Image 1: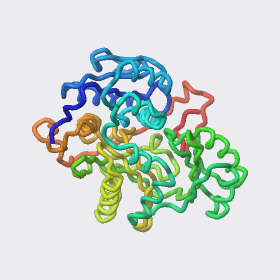
Image 2 (image 1 turned 90 degrees about the vertical axis):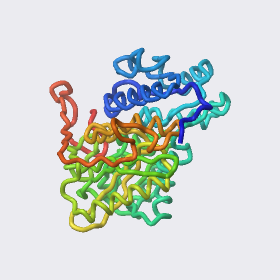
Image 3 (image 1 turned 60 degrees about the vertical axis):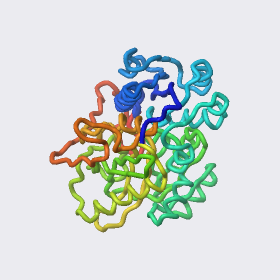
Length: 376
């Protein structure tokens, strides 16, 4: 498949200011994507409010807007620049949410801007907790017992039915923001107020706790021909209960049997194909440490923190390939060194990611790890 020739100018939305969960990892990915699109001859317009990023260097994009990443400002840029298309999954959760808002508010339709790569319907099925649960159940993939709630009262009733402890997972937030474990109704109320406020759709998943299970991730890639590959499997040394952004992570997977690893890998491929995601995708699993019982935790239908780790660990340029898939190219058409992007990397070495918590700089920060990335 050849690249699309009906588009000339593409808008990329960055991940915004440096906050925990969306800094260097997304700058790394966004820079790759911008350069990949320029390499194919497209004009790249970048909107990112962070001047500290490499992405906002003038050589990375043809035009750079350092404006607030809000619906109002990005809509103004679109109306002024009139891009032909936008790629939603490069700027982390910030870029993804903003692209979805632009579509839902009719800005993209008004300005005739195409949404490239993964469709909005696929993004919504992966990001919306209820739709994701229904999808998994429809294809026979196990999900943790849970209920979708839209108010504190609904959350309390759901927790009673499921049984404590439970974990709260707000929809459409980054880095697990607003979530946490509740062992009682009092704790649920305390966490729930913040969780509902922070979810842009005021939706919180109340989920049975599987704290202590192994947390396994797969970085997978799919093109519009439905060709899907696994780029990297990663194992969190810390069990479920610690956000993967705070966990020590190793690649390749070290402690699983070949049968269990294949079982989870097959599930990840099955899921990315069912969701029809185009580009890179991160799939997270919880695996019972004593049996082969597993649950799907979530899917990130975008370039993520784990994508940056998998990319560096495997040498496979995930964001670059994702950008080229978004403009219509197949994995076989995309060159990586002396081969094409359809190969699956094999790691004959070990990569470890170890977080550093600078308590010397943030003396008042809590030293407790949980489902939210540490930033307080």
